[in-house]
Image (cartoon, rainbow, N blue to C red; front, side, top):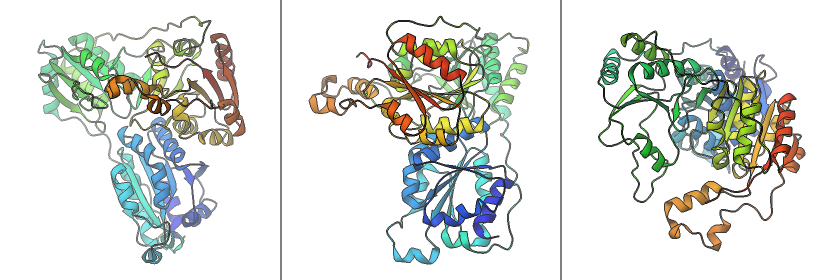
Length: 520
């Protein structure tokens, strides 16, 4: 085996069976090894931001890391935004970044860069292999790190890739199981829940499963505690049969008002909530200063076991959770807007669908209006770096080919990684993209108002920076040009019919939903 072959074989031995790639010259021996080593699926993406976003979506749905293959520092740089989103969501990922041959680095060729320096801020572990006989061991360590929810970035010099590795591949490594929550913290949480004070439990972590929502709801019923999630939990099970859980509002003012009466906050996989941005006269911390906070469990802890233990300690194992009933709204009619899209989605959403949400302002209506829809998983944009939705849908569809994936996408954010449509077509992925086309950066218009810049009223130059019309983008033509069937909806009736047709069929389809911009 050469180094690249031992690397891929090690990944396969450790359950990493898919690699999202955008390779260059330095990675050609890795590319060649894909035909020599059985078990690795290669998925080509036309931009590195699609590579990393797809790896994120795949890992969210499988719980296991995918690999990425990136070309040197610039390729890694192009992937950073969605690696950032994955890191914020505690999503595992193994990045393989090609580099010049070790002896070539001294010449400072045009693509030479500080790969470790670029990778560091978005990685938990960065390592450059120094020899072909070390790469398999290094790959095993990368998988071990990723297995506990980390971003592992392994740099692969070209001569390490083509050099001989007589030791061959490494066997599967042992990945640490989620850590049990310390008894002292469980006792503190128990005391808080029995204190009679106004208390809330906030859920977060890599996944809020249906069982977690039911356990938390039972604790809420038994103690009177409010049950919430973070604003954008990484993955959450929702819909009929799941426990009723509030979502912390996005706008800081609304979030602060939501928690203003709290005396105690128990964090389960979630961080202490803060405002996404600073605003004049608005506090950065969401919970009241007087609110006692307990970090009961981190995202890597055994969250479900901790909640079960609390229920038993409360002597509340018979508590009946509050669950969402199946209540489907009627299909809307008339003018098409964000609310009518949300109602149609709630009515037509298939059972066990996966919703990837990067709808930004237009998508805000979809979350509450689908609370009583068929049971489904909802993936959120965790790091705030747009251009995540379309690639994450690619990864989710590859992870769960038997499930329908619906991607809610804003027009502005779609243009960051529009190349993902090509991969959807190439891989024949069952994805329906609902593209909210309001020809505005509406979220930025809202933030312009909220920050008070220029009194909240943009001048002509500022306004032009927030308007993505003139020319209006033709998403139907763009999708069709990359092999994805597409249609345009201007009324609710048109949207209802197009969404139903897309969800009943197979393969990728994009619906260009022409909606009015956010009214400010």
